[in-house]
Image 1: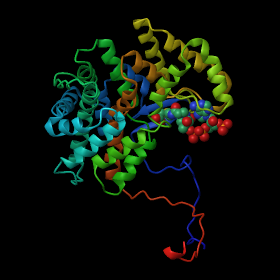
Image 2 (image 1 turned 180 degrees about the horizontal axis):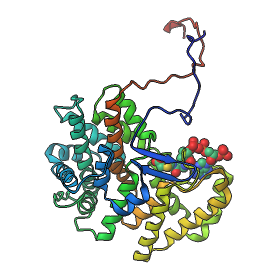
Image 3 (image 1 turned 30 degrees about the vertical axis):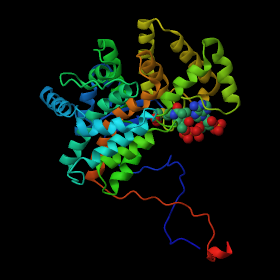
Image 4 (image 1 turned 45 degrees about the vertical axis):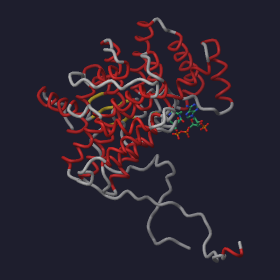
Length: 382
Ligand code: CMC
């Protein structure tokens, strides 16, 4: 049976499909360039803070000092979880995956907001602030509750990165650790129409709401081909065990077509510029803590991969060195992807707000390959 006369092309994986316009981030995959609103990611990583980048992504320009303070005040006013959310968090099984937990909690926030269906930009922005501001407390409180410890109240005098580590560990982090998390949040904040951002856009394009869009995005980020890769990198390094076992592990993996986690990218066919920056960080932390083995194993894997598959455009991506960075900072491995989600809330919300302003239902088609005209078989005859 022929389809109506509409020109269609098949693009499995959507590699060759541009789904719309965006001002948020630019990626040059051949040359390893990433910009937010035209500003090179290296400049932002060196000079800005996560809150500044949130303003940039949501307003398409850098903030003045007053504007930044005002955004920080709005965020800080929403740091607390409140008794309802905390009560729900206490019901989540201690052995649940933190990404399942986070997705559930963000979804639950939609049940507690009387303005959930208000589609105005102001209301949607307010919801984005709420989710972004509460995500660190949700992750930190869950991490503590599952160890039998009470959550630590957020401190309204701290920025997001410092406050997160404070709530996680019940002690003030050193400036270097807080800055490492802050820079990592900057580097993960947005990345074009990646899978989770696309999921958020598909959801909001039906005129659903911010909570639903962010819930879709968290579920999508979780997979190991996307944000879940940072946890898999760490587990892979643990499986390898020591530097002497690296060569055999990588060679055997390549020979058996097992993917090396933290390598390869749909868009980058050169070194991911975020990986370049995080590698420097991983080295600094290794020098500071004296724990060099993980860093040396990582660089050895990178050397072998460049030699063996560099010509295919397979290089480290953002997840490769963020894993060693987080681990060296003392983060539990299954919190790596939630920290990615904490940061990417900024980009997800930016694209949701952008989609609202020029919306069209996103509804692709598939090539039907099944039969036609099949007679219905009554239950008694099956
Ligand atoms: N290790 C070994 N070989 C690889 C890898 C890897 N990590 N990634 C791709 N390849 C090979 C793959 O085997 C295939 O080879 P061949 O052409 O000989 O069959 C070729 O490269 C193309 O791979 P693909 O999987 O078809 O490429 P894709 O564009 O569909 O996948 C990817 C991109 C990120 C899913 C993939 O590179 C991968 O699975 N990487 C490991 C997981 C990972 O690190 N994910 C994080 C992505 S970046 C952060 C984020 O987006 O969240």
